[in-house]
Structures are given as C-alpha cells and as structure tokens.
Amino acid sequence: MDIFGRKANVMSLGDNIKKIREQKGLLQKQLAAEVNIPYTSYNKVENNTRDIAIDELERFAGYFGMTIDQVVHFDVQPVDVTIQDKPNFEQINMINQLDEEDRTVVFKIIDTMLTKKKFKDFFQNNVAAL
Image: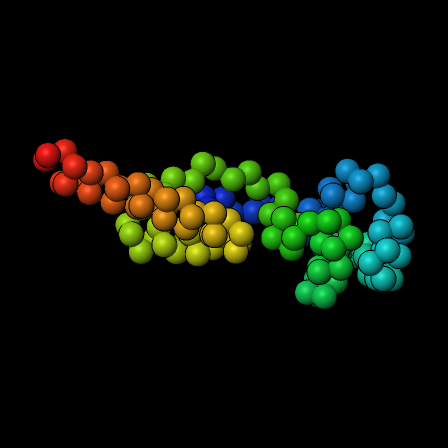
C-alpha cells in the first residue's frame, strides 16, 4: 500500500492500456499509430510479452489525457486517506506530495486558522479582561 492508501496494482500495465483503449473505443492499430509505435510492438505490450519504454508510456498517458500514474494504477481505487492520526513528520510528507496548487491551498487554510487562533487568544487575554 502506498502513502495514499492505494493497494498494489494487480493488473499489468499492458492490461491497463488495453482497458483504457477499449473504453475510448480505439482499435489497437489506431492507438499504435497515434503514439507512434509499430502495431506488432503495441500488440505485444497489450499481451504483456513486451515491456513498455518510459517515453512510450509518456506518449500513451499524453494521448489518453492522463498522468503516467493514472495509467499505471488505472484500476486501483484509492481508499480514504486520513492525515489526522499520522505522526507530524508523516503529515508533512503527505502534504508535500500534493501538487503545488493544492499545497498552496492547504497552507493558506492553515495560515487562516492560525491567524484566527491568534486573534481569539489575543481577545481572550486582553479584551475580555476589561
């Protein structure tokens, strides 16, 4: 299981590519041509008798409009991730795995909550004592 709670992928990469291709209604020859791989080589990928090169995987992912991770883990359903019960160092590691935009949002939320707490503490310590 990875840090996001996904179980190990039991399907092969070739199986995943085949499933995605079929969902998009493409023939093997069509997809092979689109990603610039000879048809016979592509057929071997789907039949799991040929490994796929990283640059080929990048072309598949790009053509499908997916990330490489989404292609590799196509049938893996993520489980709920809870950060609350994790040690502090693991919480930070999980936040750092988010893309830049999501990390920024998380940090803005934390900043807002810390500012709110400081105002509340200030009010309780200074204004409420009057």
